[in-house]
Image (cartoon, rainbow, N blue to C red):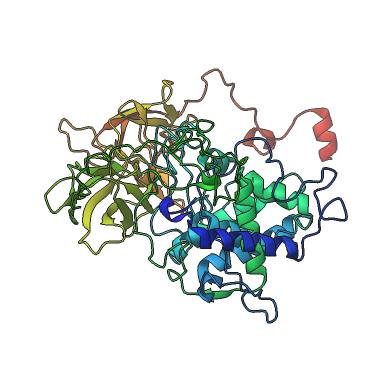
Length: 615
């Protein structure tokens, strides 16, 4: 699927002949490096199938069977002498050029899969062939330095009218449509398939179908599914048909695969040749079917499948090559009067499209959020044309700048959204990070040199509107001791746990006024040096809004003391601490017995034993 469906089929006898010649040349070459599976004549393994009549695999294909570019490669192969056929050249050698970033993505995908699934043998030229027919190599390489398309590439609405019927599966996150799905990005994944096969190949933390690195690796892994060996013809055919259930699609991809294997060259991003035209696609426009235009398989994309009427057979007769039985005419057919000539009406003049002249704020409110929380307001912009009307289907890029870790939902700093029917577009939800401060969001029109607009946003520190103690046990101890109970408080804001709230704890003097003065005696905390501290700052609540204070010690002062905890937001709580005197000795203790060294023991003894010992 790619831009401008009206460019996707080339009509006329010349292009038909060239297409037939290209397929014939491809069939004769059998795509070097691809082993025919099964029989000696190159038919499919065990079934006699060829590339032109292989049975599509079951299930919804990657693209939802969306339209695709059917332009065939030049019949003169690039870069290898002696390989061109003696057939007319339909396109210049520029067709062999692949934009630099797109080419790098294909080659990186081949190397990555070779390391993780060496049995698949997916060649980068196959990814290039699919990228060519799906999006014209990301619209000629219109990607940024990271490989993300400068404007979204979206397929037509998959509402069952000419295509698959796939109701919305991603709430419009990838395709901007909340009713039906659409194929997205340079490799045209539908959201349901991307949800399974999406990759992060450029290591930016995102799986983005609009990024050529992510999309190319996802396409390669999809082609390798089911333990396929893509050097086997049947596996190769089934892999391609799994991308789009169309035998014409299979032939077209194989044609480009063969062409790219014979030589390519790198061209600057944005200078690739678009299928069917040398004029680049208009940036920022979504693709849609053109009534009456061609589509894969030769069916009008607006005609439901199965409702096509067979083309009328040409009459038989002289000069047609299909003369019927020779029967002599019996009479001359009657001559009918010529009908009156009808005036040749002039085709209606299409209404002039007024150019886009302005992008403006569409009523965005104040952008303020507490750190770690979502912004309540979303950024909304409006695009207007010269007549002041809202311009629909214009892509607007929203980009976060400044020293901030705020992000859009999904962790992005830049997103692109299309305007609605009234010209308005709303950015995804903004989420504040941990950094407090001011930052800016720019809104600009993709692909247009219009002055962008800026939106100022502020991230404030977390606050609490309620602070309470956890537990209700009395906090008591004796002088010179420590409080056995640790003090824990909990902060909340609007009924929810308030994480990251700054709290200051101070031992204060009792006072009638609101001003709290630090006490110089009574309970205290200990600093890193072991010295008493009666104020602690730089305390913050945890993820559950809780804060547990360090141990509290008592000096020699007795009585009731106060601990004040104040949280950011103005809320505070005061807790009582009771310090009792040291316990007195028990009065029931007996008097001590005389020691041997007391004066009584030194008096002379009149006992016979003492005396005996003395004489």
